[in-house]
Image (tube, rainbow, N blue to C red; front, side, top):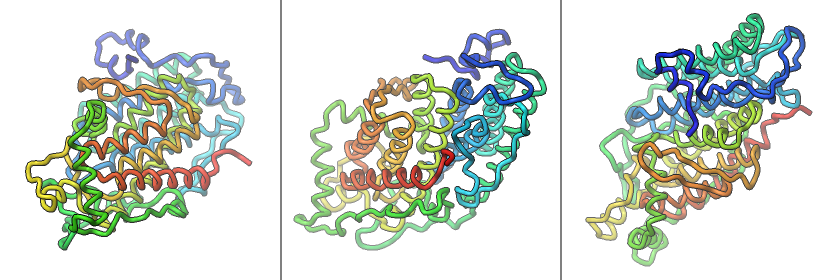
Length: 445
């Protein structure tokens, strides 16, 4: 298991920091006061991995009722953007997203002819943006963020002169300040009235006494202009309680599958349940940390994967939840108990408190699959140990698409989604991911 810097910070001996995964940047070219000889590709992704793991510390704390995936997907998006913008000037073939993202401000400029320590830029940017994205973090986690930033800075101070280090820190922080100010205007802080669930024949019925999750997602700003182009989804069959209707058969499929689940299907449902674990999509934060570690990617690759994943996830989730509250499809548990008359039936995992169609896991995982496949390839093999701390076994996949399919089907096996919600959700998510990749121009020219 890889060791994490912020764990080391809990030890009394400062010298022990160098035994942990702060990872001295390997294969570096010399850093000079003038010139840009040291490009981003020459730094490891250790700084990114450490901040991803710090986010998991914060996401492990239960989210406020009704927040749902908002905290995790916003963290993915704005962390990814801040990271990318903080280092893109050291990636000669790539360009800023200024003028491309919705209402995105122009980023600060680097000083011509001056060198930058790009890992230090990344550290400063990620430290600043995480403090802004997690204002309600516990006092303990706020201290851990301070310690992580300082410990990484101390290591970088052994690799570069003081002037270059401070210039790099100032630049990363300036970028993150711009990104954080922009993020604050995305609509997520809007104060909305309490959501009143719909009342009517065949409409969604809340499945928990807590507030409904993300009912006002449609008010959130989409990061990519035009990202909804072609991102349509065929609705499920019209609601009906007739035994021969398509809707009844769709619900019966969930019930029938629940009676013959294999141990592997049950394991998949439990692994992807979110809570207990990392509620609201935090498992995708864990995914990035683990694949960056397993593939030993460089900082430039991590920045590209992070920003594409975060933007795709953010817009996919916003579109998904807007559709959920537009269609207001009833959950399987409600239909199976009340219409099919199986009062003792229960799903394998708790049913989230928001409308059923489409499956958020399907939409989000498919959009993220598109982003990661674009950066790391079609046949990227990886193993996840996200919930090892809960005693769950690892899960291995031959590709990101295989992971998305497993996550999607796990919601049917868990008894909380219809198969059509997952199959159609994957199509929707893939289209959103493809739109992000086609509409945004990361490379120059």
